Length: 155
Image 1: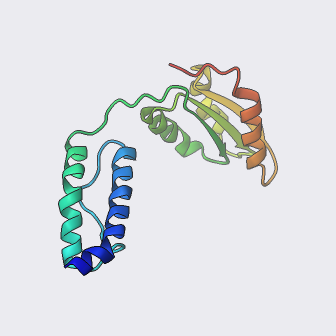
Image 2: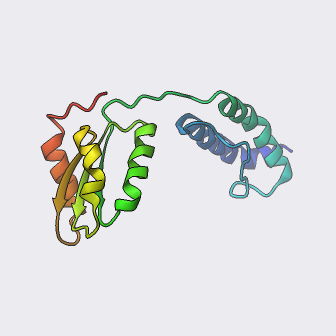
């Protein structure tokens, strides 16, 4: 038993550290099912892990952190022919706490601008066009240099 604990204790504490970080960083809750195959195939070791981790996961599952407000969270997006999905994508990220979107249209052939028009008039989206291939870095740099200082995106 002592030999087993001596050999597996560092892995156990490393695993607990990762699970603790997972609990702290998770969103609306955590599943109660764990996958221990990556850490050990030993049943005794798995029981120790379950004994140590399960209370944290139960607390996190039944008492999730709610109403996380991320003031000033903006998303830069490069899109091409995404008109049929963009409204759902924006609405999802607004519910997650994003307060502004910088959308760079890379030569879309669908009606992306028309779909975004309501969001643009509400001030939720800043629409830009960009052309050519391999221009993501240029779009990110443009957003950083042009919008980081003068943008008031708090709601």
